[in-house]
Length: 296
Image (cartoon, rainbow, N blue to C red; front, side, top):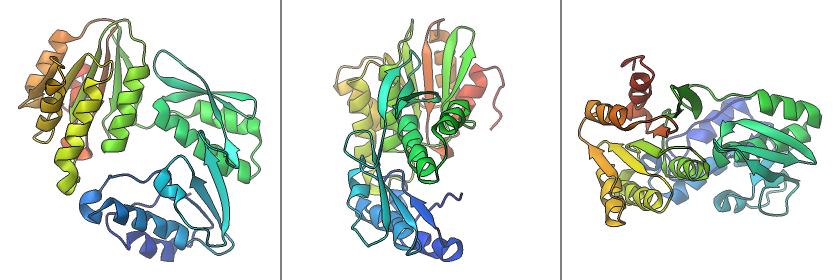
């Protein structure tokens, strides 16, 4: 199983020349890395190179819940569709969501309790179910492996710190993943405050300002109580949130001042969600809150 990354149109075609994939799956198409691709259409074109270069007798897994992926034309290759919202070859239902935003799924009558946070984890679980079912993996084994999976560091880890729930989602950030993080916080049921700590979303090119403004609007419309931002691009996030009457939207010039304010504000029962692009090294916030100091 190989993950393919790309920053420009043509990158995936070159890698597929080495890999020659038998099975291909695209989880989503969004503005991530748009600085290198130039346009969202080019992101789609670049990712479709994976399907284009899959062997003729191979299998394509099509996420019908992503409208840009669903546009891939029928090229004669075997297609397995999956969806939570539409009729597809493989589907699952959301059974429940716990107080921390972890999904309980129903896959063909079997309940699966995810340890990973949020709707994005549920989407990824569905993709895994589609591949596993195609490979004739028993449902009992699918359930077992999904329920034992814990995300790697910085990918939505839950840390219990003195009665405070800290979510470390600092590995990276783009408009889609931040929107999913906001949705996750909205679905959580803390006894205290919801505090969202956000660093810049990088590599956004000429879409950066608009993307950061849109995130500010989403946060102001959610149940998040406090927004703490760091980085020059998130100035627009805070400005937009404040224009929508979110008084507790604050921008910090330094990460040190953000951490000091956060430590003063936090109380037992709060949920603190930390996110930002890799270049922002927002794990420094997590390290200080967990008394590890600045380890980045």
